[in-house]
Structure formats: structure tokens, C-alpha cells
Amino acid sequence: MQFHETLRSGRHLAGTFIKTPHHAVVEVLGQSGLDFLILDSEHAMFGWADIDRAVLAARHAGMPCLVRLADDRPADMLRVLDCGADGFLVPHVTCAAQAEAIARAAHYGARGRGYAATTRAGEFGARSMAEHLAASAAPVVIAQIEDPEGVENAAAIAAVSGLSAIFLGPADLAVAYGETSTQAPRVQAAMAHVTKAARAAGLPAATFAADMAGALALFRSGFTMAAIASEQKAMLEYFSPEAVRRAKPGGAA
Image (cartoon, rainbow, N blue to C red; front, side, top):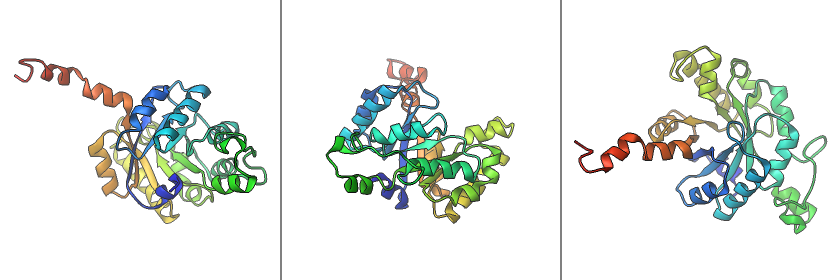
């Protein structure tokens, strides 16, 4: 089953953001119980060679891999899909016209994704054109809504054909609303509004969770996809000063 089918199945999916631009991190997490990984090229120093190797490691491990892009440039979407990623997230989507341009850039067709089968996604030319078009017909294209304008236009954005899910960015929403907590009533109301719009359009609603408990609460509230923290936070929590202290003789006293 391709990841876009898994995403639309209604199953609860738990993944994480990868902040360290190295394929070994992906290789290790390929052995985890996670359902997907997101390479964060918006907020981490991923170069194209890093993304290429990380996607290769994910494919080797059989782990679905998405890339969070820095913006909505079609050329970046093309390169991510050509190197074999399952799809991508575009941050700060604020209107239907922008979402339509993103969906068009991700799909083959008139004024859409440029065709090439001599890529990893096309098995380096081993597929026929018909086979490659069929295998590439449904890339995972996720629009991130994390601005007040995007919240206002959520229904129109979610109605755009070619999108796979809506991802809410609670931290950016909080900052945009002048709040200092993602639990602020205005932020929570905005998230509920966007989630309702996604459901009405038949799209999965996804968002960020700070930890496992937070992911469970989100799943119970109607989200079906949660990106839980990052590998960096997992390391820091496992080796936190308190955890290390408890591991030493007399540390639990």
C-alpha cells in the first residue's frame, strides 16, 4: 500500500520530524514503530544531497518519508518527488489559489510537474511512461495552515483537488495570534475550525504533538496524523540531566 492510501484510510498515524541532516538517523528510525518520517528542510540544515541520501535510507527501510519544504517553489517539489520521497508538506498556505498551484506542481499534466522517468522515482528509466505515470499519480501533498489568513480560508483550501491532508502548525498560529501558548483559547478555536473544514472536505487532519501523550489526545479529538516532536527532543529527554542523575548511584534519592 502506498503512503497516500494509508493516509486516506483513516488509520491513526504517528511519525516524527527529523532535524539532523544525516541518513543514519533515518536508517535507525526505520527500525522504529513509527508510521512515517518528515525531513524538516524548513527549520533544519538539509541540503539536496542530505535529502537524497535520507530518502534512499527511508526507502531501504520501507519507511514512508515526507519532506517539509521551506516554501512553495515548484522546482523544490519536483526534486523531492523525483528523488523518491512519498510527498511533501508546504508551510504557510494561506489561500485556495496557492493550494491549487501547489497541487498542480505536484501532479503530471498541463502546466504541472515536469516529466522524467530517469530518476529514483522512475526506477532510473526501468519503467515505461505508462507505468511511471500510474505509480506517480497520487503523491502526498500536504498544505500547512499556520496563519490567521489560512484559518479564514481553511474551507476553500481543503476543497482544492490534489491535496492529501491539511497540517496545522499550532506554534506558528500561536505566534501569529500574539499568544505565548498553543493552548490559548484563540489558537485552540482556530485548530478546531481548520479540523472541521478538513473533515468536511474528506481530508485527514494532521498536526504536531509535543509528546506521546499529546498525540493520544489529538487522536482522540479527531486528528488522524500526528508528527511527534523530533529525534533531537527524544535524545534530549532520554539523556536529560534528571534522567542521567537518576541513572547514577544515589540519584533517585
